[in-house]
Image (cartoon, helix red, strand yellow):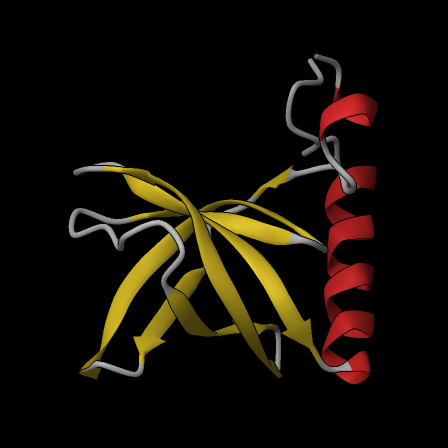
Length: 113
Protein backbone atom coordinates (compact mmCIF):
# COMPACT_ATOMS: atom_id res chain seq x y z
CA UNK A 1 0.00 0.00 0.00
CA UNK A 2 1.25 3.50 -0.72
CA UNK A 3 1.32 6.20 1.94
CA UNK A 4 -1.89 8.04 0.96
CA UNK A 5 -3.87 4.78 1.15
CA UNK A 6 -2.49 3.62 4.48
CA UNK A 7 -1.68 6.68 6.62
CA UNK A 8 -3.49 9.88 7.37
CA UNK A 9 -0.24 11.83 7.94
CA UNK A 10 3.27 11.47 6.48
CA UNK A 11 5.92 10.23 8.92
CA UNK A 12 9.18 12.10 9.45
CA UNK A 13 12.45 10.58 10.61
CA UNK A 14 13.47 12.25 13.86
CA UNK A 15 15.04 11.24 17.15
CA UNK A 16 13.49 12.98 20.13
CA UNK A 17 13.74 11.79 23.75
CA UNK A 18 10.29 10.92 25.10
CA UNK A 19 8.79 10.13 28.49
CA UNK A 20 5.97 7.61 28.40
CA UNK A 21 3.63 7.16 31.36
CA UNK A 22 0.95 4.59 32.04
CA UNK A 23 -1.63 4.75 34.83
CA UNK A 24 -0.38 1.46 36.31
CA UNK A 25 3.31 2.45 36.31
CA UNK A 26 4.55 5.25 38.59
CA UNK A 27 7.98 5.69 37.00
CA UNK A 28 8.15 7.24 33.52
CA UNK A 29 9.49 5.04 30.75
CA UNK A 30 12.20 6.73 28.70
CA UNK A 31 12.32 6.13 24.97
CA UNK A 32 13.25 7.86 21.73
CA UNK A 33 11.24 8.49 18.58
CA UNK A 34 12.29 6.79 15.36
CA UNK A 35 9.63 8.69 13.45
CA UNK A 36 6.92 11.21 14.19
CA UNK A 37 3.78 12.56 12.53
CA UNK A 38 0.70 14.56 13.53
CA UNK A 39 -1.12 11.29 14.24
CA UNK A 40 1.48 9.48 16.33
CA UNK A 41 5.02 8.16 16.53
CA UNK A 42 7.18 5.06 16.67
CA UNK A 43 9.22 4.75 19.85
CA UNK A 44 12.43 2.77 20.08
CA UNK A 45 12.38 0.96 23.43
CA UNK A 46 13.52 -2.38 24.82
CA UNK A 47 10.61 -2.90 27.22
CA UNK A 48 7.60 -2.53 24.96
CA UNK A 49 4.02 -1.93 26.03
CA UNK A 50 1.03 -4.08 25.12
CA UNK A 51 -1.16 -3.14 22.16
CA UNK A 52 -4.23 -1.14 23.28
CA UNK A 53 -2.42 0.26 26.35
CA UNK A 54 -3.31 3.89 27.01
CA UNK A 55 -0.30 6.16 27.54
CA UNK A 56 0.65 9.76 28.25
CA UNK A 57 3.53 11.05 26.14
CA UNK A 58 5.78 14.04 26.92
CA UNK A 59 8.56 15.39 24.69
CA UNK A 60 10.22 18.68 23.87
CA UNK A 61 10.45 20.48 20.54
CA UNK A 62 12.84 23.36 21.10
CA UNK A 63 11.51 25.25 24.12
CA UNK A 64 8.02 23.77 23.78
CA UNK A 65 6.88 20.90 25.98
CA UNK A 66 4.47 18.69 24.02
CA UNK A 67 2.00 16.61 26.02
CA UNK A 68 -0.19 14.03 24.32
CA UNK A 69 -2.42 11.13 25.14
CA UNK A 70 -2.18 8.03 23.02
CA UNK A 71 -2.74 4.34 22.56
CA UNK A 72 -0.26 1.62 21.62
CA UNK A 73 -1.13 0.31 18.14
CA UNK A 74 1.86 -1.94 17.50
CA UNK A 75 4.39 -3.77 19.61
CA UNK A 76 7.70 -5.25 18.49
CA UNK A 77 9.44 -6.81 21.54
CA UNK A 78 12.94 -5.46 22.20
CA UNK A 79 12.48 -2.98 19.32
CA UNK A 80 9.65 -0.54 19.98
CA UNK A 81 6.02 0.55 19.97
CA UNK A 82 3.85 2.36 17.48
CA UNK A 83 1.63 4.97 19.15
CA UNK A 84 -1.46 6.74 17.88
CA UNK A 85 -2.15 10.13 19.43
CA UNK A 86 -5.69 10.33 20.80
CA UNK A 87 -5.38 13.89 22.12
CA UNK A 88 -2.95 16.74 21.54
CA UNK A 89 -3.94 20.29 22.53
CA UNK A 90 -4.41 22.78 19.68
CA UNK A 91 -1.36 24.74 20.89
CA UNK A 92 0.84 21.62 20.91
CA UNK A 93 -0.55 20.55 17.51
CA UNK A 94 0.55 23.91 16.11
CA UNK A 95 4.13 23.47 17.42
CA UNK A 96 4.24 19.85 16.21
CA UNK A 97 2.92 20.76 12.76
CA UNK A 98 5.52 23.52 12.32
CA UNK A 99 8.31 21.18 13.43
CA UNK A 100 7.18 18.45 11.02
CA UNK A 101 6.97 20.93 8.14
CA UNK A 102 10.58 21.93 8.88
CA UNK A 103 11.61 18.26 8.75
CA UNK A 104 9.72 17.73 5.50
CA UNK A 105 11.50 20.67 3.88
CA UNK A 106 14.79 19.15 5.06
CA UNK A 107 13.94 15.87 3.27
CA UNK A 108 13.19 13.77 6.37
CA UNK A 109 9.97 12.25 4.96
CA UNK A 110 9.91 8.47 5.53
CA UNK A 111 9.98 6.39 2.36
CA UNK A 112 11.43 9.18 0.21
CA UNK A 113 15.03 9.06 -1.06
